[in-house]
Image 1 (cartoon, rainbow, N blue to C red):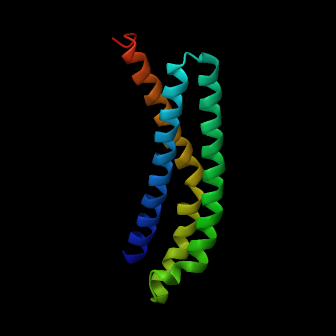
Image 2 (image 1 turned 180 degrees about the vertical axis):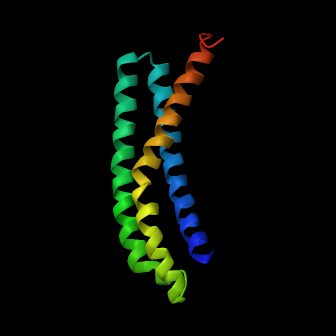
Length: 122
């Protein structure tokens, strides 16, 4: 259970980074849409999704190395460290998918709220 809790907390911390990028993307999207830059809306969405992929791949590499070599920071129990090493591939490997899911959802919600604000979603 200790290894699970450590992996879960690391996972949740990285999800906050993904959510932060999604919120920033929503703000950029609203700003561009308010200026009636409809072409720039698509460009902004594409750029934020690109940033999500880059951040996800970077987090994958960072977490894979960090959790593999730095798991002793959390505990000195050899059994827990061994179990953490088994979970590293899952926690680190899912980061790009998590980033894309959060950012895509944030952009989708941002577009939906803009449409509703204009009366199209009623």
